[in-house]
Length: 120
Image (cartoon, rainbow, N blue to C red; front, side, top):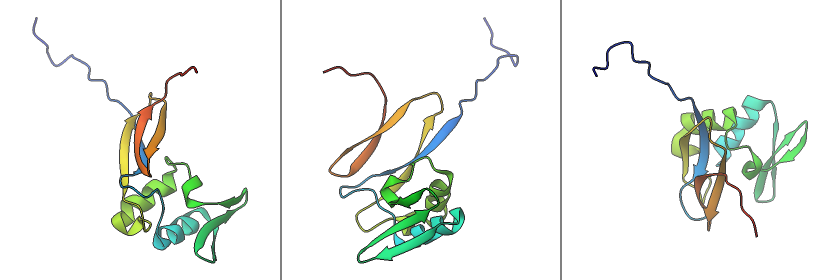
């Protein structure tokens, strides 16, 4: 059977997710924190040796941002390695939209895994 031009190609929609690819842990650099605060209209609070966002919903640490947050994705795309925190190497990963995903980690190095059910 010959496959002609009438064959439909299914385009898979993808979701972008930011993960940390080195040991140490996810974290944003100060430049990225300022960019996200500006994009979201939040206040960047710098206290002692830590930075966090003050949003209408309350205080948010960089590690608490949803990893598929459009402003986080845009910031990492624009700033590249200048978005990385001191112990981070951020990477944007594309995952099919129909996959229920979760972020797994070992000593701060992360990967994306498909969610599944577990029992004790």
